[in-house]
Structure formats: structure tokens, C-alpha cells
Image: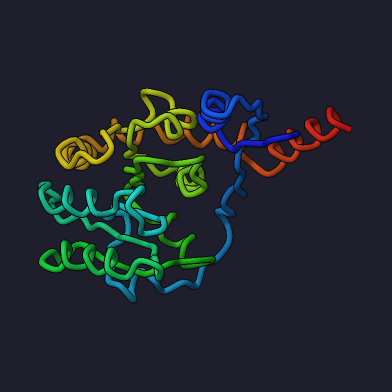
Length: 227
């Protein structure tokens, strides 16, 4: 029996709970093409201000905590910054409706629905920061993508996120905690120079460990070991 997990956290979980050994091979991304012309008009279509928005890019589900992020953003002193919620969840319309209701009195919270291709690239390229306040993650592709676009990160202090981000390379919050998330948002706005000092190291970590070339080499080595 051969099991592959995308994070060390998952590998430990399967060993502890099921007594099964697994090999960790992470998810992978393509590094952004910084020279490619992008005709996406998503920023103008939603009146999103370049370089002045926090980006949440994920399915709209409980585990990823977009509700806590919206509440924290409502409570924070955001000084003209926006929060862009990029994602959907057709299987849970009542939950998504609730998110819109929590945000309805704040014109700085913008829902774009799910984004792909050039629209997603445009949002990643022009954000102020990326937010991943999840309670549970495997190994987030969106997080790796944000790091590859040199976005500073606000992240929940869960094992899956800490596997990718070093302790001093993110603003950490507790999952399902509006106050600590609010504090992280305000810290990012009030001290952007320190916040942005992390981005080159995070980009290098993705480049050196999570590109398709690097991950494919791990798969090849693993397959050769079991043949």
C-alpha cells in the first residue's frame, strides 16, 4: 500500500490516527510570468483599487473562515483599504448569502465570485496582501500562488500554513478569532514596510520547493523507489 500526502501535517495525521505510513509530496504551482500582458478588466469592473486591497481567494466554506475575515475587516480601522472575496460555493447558498449579509453595510468589501486565468492573475498581481485565516488546510495552492506573486501574508497559525511559512514571514492570527484577525489587518496597514520585508524570502521558498519541476522530481524519485 502506497500513500502520498500533500503536507507533513497530513502525513503525521494518517500515522497517528490510522497507523499508516505515507510519503509527503507537496502541491505545486507555476511561477508567474511577469512580462505577460494581461487584458483582464476585473479591477475596473468591480472598482477595485490597485495595491489597496486584501485578497481572500478560496472556496466559500466554513473551514476557510471568510465569515471571520469579513467580521474582522468590518471591525478594523481599514483606512480606505478594500477586502476582495474571490470564490463561491454553489453547494451552500445559505452560507454564501450570510457572507453577503455580513458585508452589506461595508462598500469596501467586494465579492467577485470565483476567478480563473487572467482575472485571478490580475487580482494576485495587484493586491496589497493575501489572507488565509483557515481552520483546516491541506497545503493551499492559493497560498503558494500568493507567495509567488510576492504578496505579504496574513495567515492562521495552523500546522499546514506554518509548514510553508517561517515564523517571521507572515502576520499570524488565531483561526476563528475575530480580534486577532482584526489586529493583523491593522498591523499590516500601519506597518507596511515591515510587512513587505517578508516577500522575497517567501518567493524564494516557493521557487526552491514548490514549482512543478521540483515536485515532479519528488514523484519520479518516489516512483523509482517502489518499482
